[in-house]
Length: 367
Image (cartoon, rainbow, N blue to C red; front, side, top):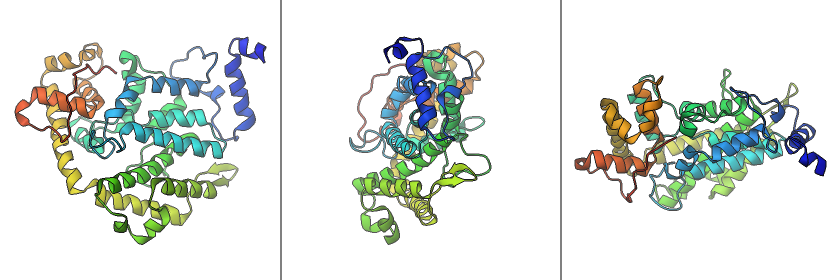
């Protein structure tokens, strides 16, 4: 054993060999992973473990702690942020990967990187940038842009193709739980993250809405309350258990599935959250003000290159990037509190301070 560990690449090689022995034939094997730019492998980590670590140590990952999930930070200490959502997705996805003998390291890396491109103020901020930015904006494409280009002072993380694919294809919006027409991630691990994302937000957005008093348990249709129970742990357990029970080999390949009744209940719960929580008047009021912040900042930096360079000097090095893209990168990368603080500096007369805003130092946002 000592000889294996002391030999060049011995620890990594042992991990790769263990994958071949333990994982399902359809699992992604780290020894087959490829990158856009080839590099020397790590002697003690597999390719997917290395990707996971690069994501965790990135500045974009740290900023998720101060980005909105549903409730604008800092509405309360116990509401989910984009970071805690990411960790919950990772935990669910790893549980599923372990149970199905898929690659946990790949699953974890995709899960930890899937929301790096989210804007401040959640999906509301995403919709504003999609409206303002030429060519539109999606958080999944921005997540890929961050890991490919913006991280490490515009050098990128050079992640494996498997992780990049899972990040780009994780989002479903209001579409079907399982993608159609070739939109699924190429790996089963990527598909697990896509499903785990919806499991996580259905459970914790409902939990947060109940905690905030936006809805009461009795507001849920009886069939949904019976299917998911009163607590997030109960609902996660129900969805995970049903997925594992219904997923089975089809034509020699594992196919992920929910029982029809559970898939129907999940879609109905998602519709309930859109109607009763995401469009709740109390949230809409805060998000309307947040949207103005995003729009003011985007327009201000787009109109004044010198102002952009003052706050985002790395834009000077982005020679082949259209000016509007640099503005979009900067605004999308902001945390809630950073966007609020800059807005107060640039537009003091607007007084669009969100409830509960605390002072924030204006640290330059370098990706």
